[in-house]
Length: 387
Image (cartoon, rainbow, N blue to C red; front, side, top):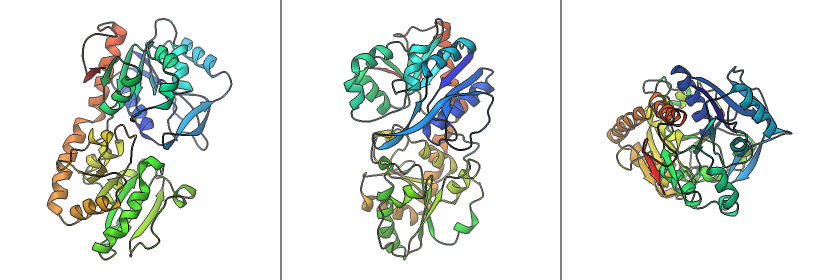
């Protein structure tokens, strides 16, 4: 098949959708398909990839407690139509299909005979834009030949406003890249307990609550603890609220790291913590940590419960609760056998989400859509649900 994947989040912009698109394309190419990614231009150096088509320019827009990508530029819709005409894709897969601008424009730009698949990533109790524009967006959603959601919480949000069938296809992880046994970063192996946070410093990621938990951990460990923050630093890190007295604890604002270095940070961590407060549909960083053999502490929110089973392969804690975070971290710090148990169970779960497995499920959906083996309303595959 010839496949086009449309996304407003791609390298060099980090994020969960970026990783999903990259690995989906890579695995589908390994399976023998021709895949091109349609995305936009970003500030700073862009990787040179023959399989990427860029139009317009990216801007960041505040939405749902985060900064989301949006493409601006003249004639975007006509450029998409020309790309789809020229490339003659069999199937076009758009991520976040009802979000302006490129994903939403894609639905109107698809040419006759091209099949259209959309993946819904967002999770929340409600969505103001979906409610306000439910009519026109519903008509666009009806034009999708197949709908996917990355988790039950993502399916629940989308189906609340746009009822229909949704295939639940979870995000994947590169289990060869993230694995136990990778050499840790020596300068951080100095006797302190290393807690790792990976992600943007968006409000919904909850980093300030982890910072506030740090002195509580430090008090119990006599200051022998360090928080490694990988993802952003500079102005964003200065805005991250933190205690004035860290009680001897250390915070290292690492910033963004090259992809090849990220596994070493997971290998360095004694505990990985993701204290997000809401609107996380899945949690790719949780899978990365589990694949690497790190013990995981995460907020008890619906999207994270799709990845972590409390007491089985990690610990879930109350959102927005530094004391709860601190108790979980200290429990793992004091119990090496529990850390080992979670590391083994987490690795086993990550292997079930290895990208070749997830990509084969996506390939099967494409084949059904293109081949007409299954109608828009019929059948069941990949955890399909209807509401």
